[in-house]
Image (cartoon, rainbow, N blue to C red; front, side, top):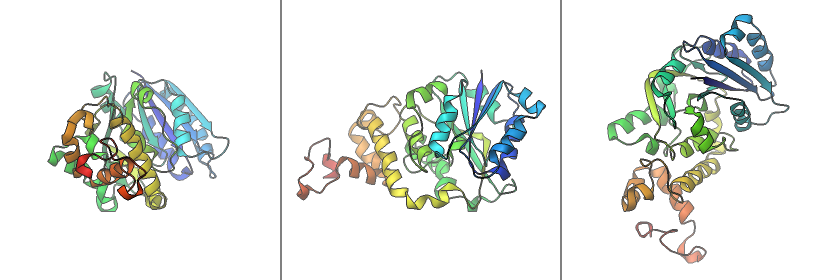
Length: 307
């Protein structure tokens, strides 16, 4: 099996060499490496060039590709360009300021390489700007305890993704080539392209959580989630619309994900367990008050339990 490690890079020159080193040190043999720099204003591209020109580094990989966007085109475009250059059976994303544990590729490949449709992620270990492990209290609460809450409640992980992007980062995603083919590219969203991708993925296959591995997520002053509030509402709505299109308006392939097709009338009870999703699905399927007389009140736009 060939594994593809994909790195979308932007303005991370101080972290990039460490990031690449953790890919080099993987215990799994057959890896192709694809790096796309989004026209960083710093020396990120030059750092990557210097590292991959090392003889030992280049020989370690089945292939190694490094490209630079002609102008700054955004994270979603950079990820998609990098993904288009892959040929591996299993794809590992990695942010250019984060890092892999030494066994990450092997752990996923050994357990899930034969899965035709696969979408997974691991536990997250926050690290500081110097790469040292730090206390979880600096990590957003909704992400810290999301997996624990789901496991205690016995809820499917696909349902938990309706509350937030519980994998914490695009770089924590691992998926099969067939899943990418069915789900498609990352959406044109500034910050929530990863959540949107995850919500489309969970309508295809139930996600897998690997507790035995750690994705090393670097917390620093420029983390994107720290600036999310300015676009939170519009991009959350886009993510919810994407999920509804695939799980409510259509019959989802994943028979476990939260959908009227999977659970019938019980769906309207289950959805109340997820206030964020409950709010948005009402906005999407019953967006106007009755007195506006703009949307016809029928079973599709306004189910009885919501009237």
